[in-house]
Structure formats: structure tokens, C-alpha cells
Image (cartoon, rainbow, N blue to C red):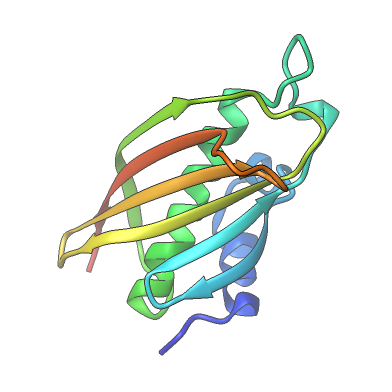
Amino acid sequence: MTLTNEAAAAILADNFAPWVRDLGLTVTETGERHAVLRLPWSEGLAREGGALSGQALMAAADTATVIAVSAARGGFGPMTTVQQSIAFQRPVTGRDVLIRAAITKLGRRLAFADITLTAEGADEPAAHATTVYALAD
């Protein structure tokens, strides 16, 4: 069963802390083992110098992983981050960011994901992350 964008949006609305919802993330695509979210540009998320903060990008990558895992499992279930790593490759200023989370392995207890964060219209990623999630029954 494929997770619809509407169902994914409901997962965002129903299962995340208010500060995560305040990021303004929207689901633009879901598939069998992936999800794409949009992080809208906001001065409130920029750090000194005007670039989007790393904390916002990490939270967006983490959130996109939950949606991708939910898509791969056919719906939301209890899960928690057990590892997340990110490499910041270039700053993002004044543009939305597209976050593509792809599940690379889905086991019974763990899920692994590869996340690419790219400024809208850019050819090269702004950041690359990997995550590992523990899945509850």
C-alpha cells in the first residue's frame, strides 16, 4: 500500500513536536521506499551570515526519514532515531530546500536511510545525511 502525500502530511501534523511543525515542512512526493519534503526558506531559520542553519537541515532530514520509513512500511508506527550523520557541503541562502530520503535497508527492527538536501534549482546538494531508525512492533 502506497502512502499518499495527504496521509504523509497527516503524519507530520499528528506525530511531531510543535517546533518541528513550525519549520513549515511539506510533503511533495512519496513512493514505495522514499519521500521528498520541502523546507521553505525563512529568515527565522537563517544563522549569522544569512545561510540556513544546520540545525534546521538536520531536523528536516530526520523528519523526512520518518515519512520515508512510513511510506516503506505502509503507514506510521513507533520508531526512533538511533543514529544520524550529516555533511554540510554548501550554504543555502534565500531558497527552499528539497529533502529526499530514500530507504536503503528496511529490516524488522532497523531502517537505514540516505538523505540528500538540495536547494531548489541547484544541481549539487547542500548536505548529505544518513540515518538509522529503530522500529517498534
